[in-house]
Image 1: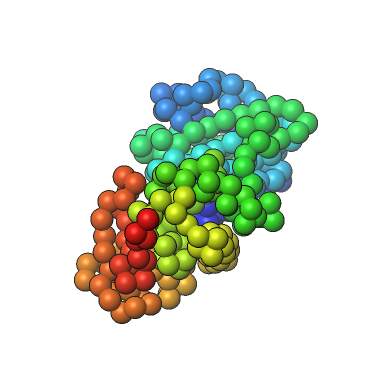
Image 2: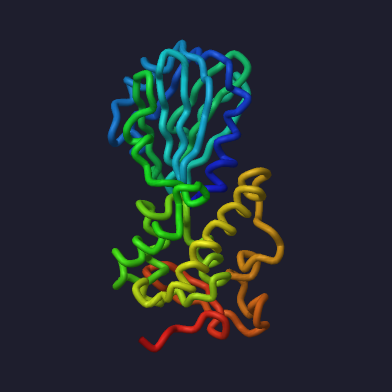
Length: 268
């Protein structure tokens, strides 16, 4: 599933469409991305409008159109955005296509776990403005992290970092990267983290997020070469910190990579 930096990069596929009018809107009405919405409303609302701005928040995107019209997209597991030529013929999994004079803006989602939302009004919709603080924002404080860990103190820290209501945009590989850098075992209980470990978790969340946005979010592809990311899925690879073999097992329902020599489980 795309994570926050990948979502930012994906959103740039529609960047050339800013300032251009939507001449026609095509939808695949049977797609489950419209499970909360009548596709005909999307076709009527955005035809004739102009794409003005876009932004991302965690794993979500918001596109603002002229006339106070807003389009929200969630990529789900397999959703992605594309720019195609004017005469592009829609493909099987194209859920939404916005036709402009010089291009076609496409939202494709083969597994249909993504979502399309729309809103009309002067201000951004509540389902956007009410989202939790982004993990790279000033509002994401050490005190906030401490409160989250206390509220979910019996949960595994791996599971807590995957909760989008607390850590929007953070996904599986980023969680592994954060915990490895903070030297925290993924199966540690959130309530067992000392103040020093809580601070390390907060700092490394900021570090990994900002690093991913500067690399993956800016140009696509992979994060810096010295990250755990580059060895976490490869059999027989060693930890870049300790030089010892890495472990891969299921933790909190997700395949997880860590170094048992760096990330030790407490005895509490």
